[in-house]
Length: 315
Image (cartoon, rainbow, N blue to C red; front, side, top):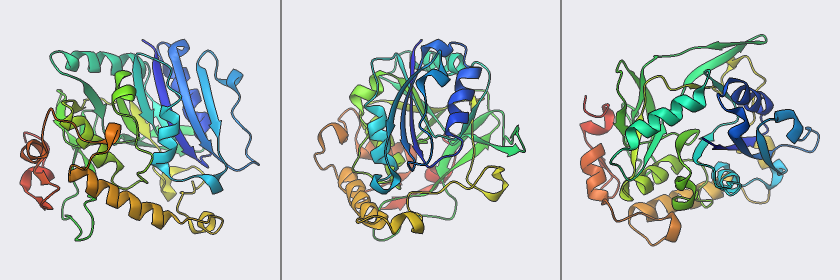
């Protein structure tokens, strides 16, 4: 029942809260192993292993000026994996239901029968702070399913698409064609078969990972009652503002801009969907890109979308 929890944190004031809440609400807190990449300035105290007992903590500290984007940090965090049965990639600003670990494992096991591999994922329901109190603001207690954001489509110069989570009042898990990088649960085998690509920057990372999973024969599911919540970076969050990697003040200290990394990332996504050889970071052969188009309504090579891309699968 061991779970490796991958967290890439960027100057996040609620990182310690996230780890503490995951431990406090877990059914098996002693079986949690956190792999944390903390990109915080020297003035911010480092995390101490003893603080998060009985869970295990593997910790890497990086000055923000040397950070190279979310995917780079996720790749480092994933490298701290040490053979746990399950893998859970989350953001550094999360809240959890009681026994979230048991619930996710049971849901994954139920869906895994007869399949090569499964991933549970969705953009989670939000929570906010009201003073010291955590308040959840769920859009639904059932399923959050991903679709392409209505009214949007492909830009002429790159294949990155915007996605949304839509509430579906359904008691069964729904198959998905997109995932959330900040809420991604599957077997530990995921780490060995699908290492995170550090040459992506941020936009397009979820599309790339979903395509890799799909073409290797793995299935994405959106499950009812997702037992985690996300603190969105809005004025209503009740938390101190959280800087982003591309904020202007941070950019002024770097020799290489985020925009340069973003352009490289867009080109990498374009090469991936074209079937360029990328080794462990490339597409599989169990299913084709044409199969993905039939499944999702998204044709990355032709840069076209049909109605399936905007609607919850099977609805």
